[in-house]
Image 1: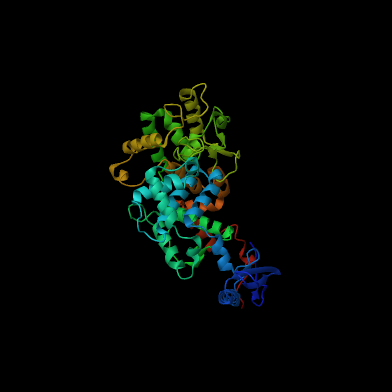
Image 2 (image 1 turned 90 degrees about the vertical axis):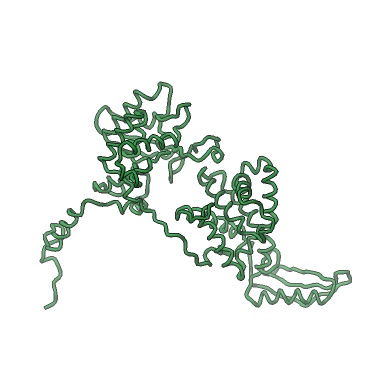
Length: 469
């Protein structure tokens, strides 16, 4: 839809019909007219249009209406637009993204309403929105249950129009109200900063979609100053186990579940994400020599998302590697320790006809609950009572962080380490820079030598500019 400020108004027209009094105007040379039963009504309409032009509003070249009116005519409720946006993003979205978007809209829609009168029970309303309205496949499959149908009907009737979110008199109130709702958990306690950021991104996405559809001139989010919870991407170094502790933890796993030792070792030595290890297959292990360094080459990941959100209906979402295109591989050189563990695992725990290295008891993907439970049991055995009260090695994912941190402190160049870990160099430094430690004496010695002019790379004294006499 295009808009123009080239607007010309003509005198009122008259004809011998019931609606005989007309307003005529042109936008960018295109003629428009509107007819009324009385001259007073026609004159009033002409005055409104002229006032809009005087205020600097552009006029739509398709409808002839001022921009504010043209957008209002296209406006839908926030609920309807959120459903449409969900459907737009659903086919290519990861299962976790689908789940997170639905959760955000289930929080936003109930606060962006005309009235709370007759509002259904909050639990029922959330179930209807999260489990049906913002789940594309279920909504297209058929109507919700009778209980949820009432909640959806109430939402349709009471959801605000999207254009109201940008109304000068209400913008601040509504946007702040929505953002404040995103900052709380269902129990009313503050949500984690990263959770708030993820939900806010969904809110921003649907508002930008409204701009794309020419319903809003610009996203109102940028017009409201709101202090979001402070979030940090940096990993908490207190969670990361030392190499010595990793050995103790793997030994504890060996005693209880030797078939999972290689799983945790992949997270540490190959810096793999749990979903990538779950998807690891024989083809990825083609370069494992009897001795020395080997290489893993893999292209798939199977993060757990819940069966209701994946295309396959399985609990794990079979996808390409994070931040990579389909069929794009990641090659990771692995040390002799991991080569030995994977070769042993293939010999002892992988059946001849089995492709994937790690499977559940029934042959499906290894579940998060299984490898998470075994890991907690290993912590109980390996950590002291004092350590158990902390977050040290609290998640399997912390093994990956420990491996990356070790590489940084060993002096591995950031681009090389980032490639192996599946990060960009900028993201790796942003997340793990706080884990650089233990080499202060080396850096101090180098600085001291430089200050004294002893640094061989600093050049001779004769090469340096001196002070003026």
